Image 1: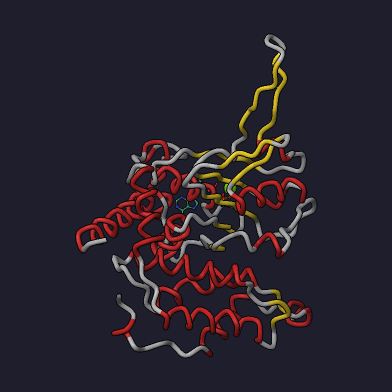
Image 2: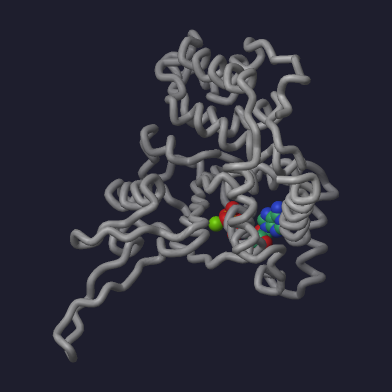
Length: 328
Ligand SMILES: Nc1ncnc2c1ncn2[C@@H]1O[C@H](COP(=O)(O)OP(=O)(O)O)[C@@H](O)[C@H]1O
Ligand SMILES: [Mg+2]
């Protein structure tokens, strides 16, 4: 990547975020993280109370990157074939024909994922990890980009099936939209609604880039962003300390370390840099690692949160300061 390509990449990222922020009221930092996950071809889990704009945000993201999008509302009677697809018998010519399920798309919105039973959840989670689907013995690759944005409510309701930790690990980031931070933002939501004269303004929004451009940006992240040895060591120390922390029963896996690397490289590109600095890593550590650590039972019962432990880990790892060495 030359200087000009880098600046153009930064501007494309900025445009995607601006476009989403025209409709979604909220902090740009969170939007940057969502974009970072998408640029790394990673999946995102939003955990929040109902009505905080999760579904809206997922739809806006899909629209902004110009991709094809499908939505599945997870319910207790949802079957794996409702997500993956199935072979259907065709009476007139006596053959089976594959009906592709909603997973064959660029951005899949898996809404209220914890309301479906484990078998259906795992069908989705397997396809997320392997980026392919097997139906009656035939294996088919999923397209690219392929980004799942799943939402779940934190309330422990009757009839919900919390995702097991092993499956949470499949999400590159766990984010939260949160409540509007102040009165101004709260009333902005109302004012925009008055201006749109409809509930959902997503369809009126023009994509910020086309999907081909988004794939280019993904490739820049993969091939054009340099990661120095000092950054590799920094990530290594963070992941290892997450396993040694006294409140942790099971720390982050190597997949967690890889997730940190991928997310940090995307953040670097979003900032218009072709090399990773420690701040890129720091910025995403809680979102990448908090859902991957399992705390000791006593600490869980006392209400300690993964986020707090991960913050503590981060504070203990010395930040590499030799900036000169980080650029290529
Ligand atoms: N931050 C926000 N910005 C703009 N609209 C919002 C925001 N949060 C909620 N809304 C609006 O509130 C309603 C509920 O949002 P929705 O995305 O369905 O919530 P969730 O999926 O989290 O339950 C929608 O009409 C949405 O447009
Ligand atoms: Mg919703």
